[in-house]
Length: 298
Image (cartoon, rainbow, N blue to C red):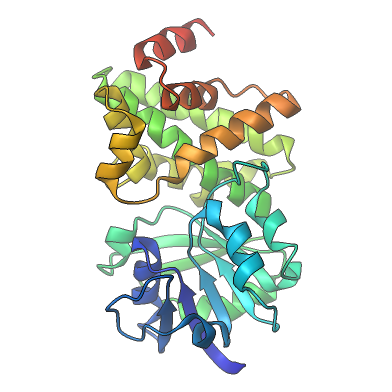
């Protein structure tokens, strides 16, 4: 293994943004399934031989990718994906636990649009890990325009990072239906309560939901067309089919599958999640106005 070297795995917009940021202080490699014209693009084997890995592949692909490609050689890993595995209802830390010791893995959270990071605009992120040593090793890799914080509340970061995408779809629907600022503010604030309720059930800390990982990321993602999930909501409000929306988007919108996962988990554990449940139904074809009426009655 090449010591003190770092690579990003996954060259979507977020992966490229992280590669740009991490390249400010040192050489950073990048790889993906398909070859791309990016500086320091390498094959997967070369990237996997680095001591530090930042994995930015879609959440729904992680389990299969790890099974097919990953060999643990004491790498330190920072997970840049946000979502819940739809088929199994597993959180990403549960999936990674089958392949990597807990002390070797951390999770990025916080408000950080790729389009702004790749321009070098200032932002703050949280590195969540049970190992503060891991945070101290990764933190110096980041440039000054990305301020890093530490938290050991991995499950809180995971729930917030996944749930905010579902709420962003709801917010996009709200905007697309021209329901007004009052309605959107009410939706986002009640969504934050719902997200927290869901997270607390799985052992998250309440403080995580009022910080960068929770409120910070939610307010960002649920209020801008830079958010893919927000744009999904706008499309649904316009009456477009989900297939059409995703084809036009040309990128993965993690909230689509995460809504399905949350619906399964909330049903299994008896957690009250009305907004996420309605988003799942609208994604399946329910009229958004009917969802609005049902939410107002609930």
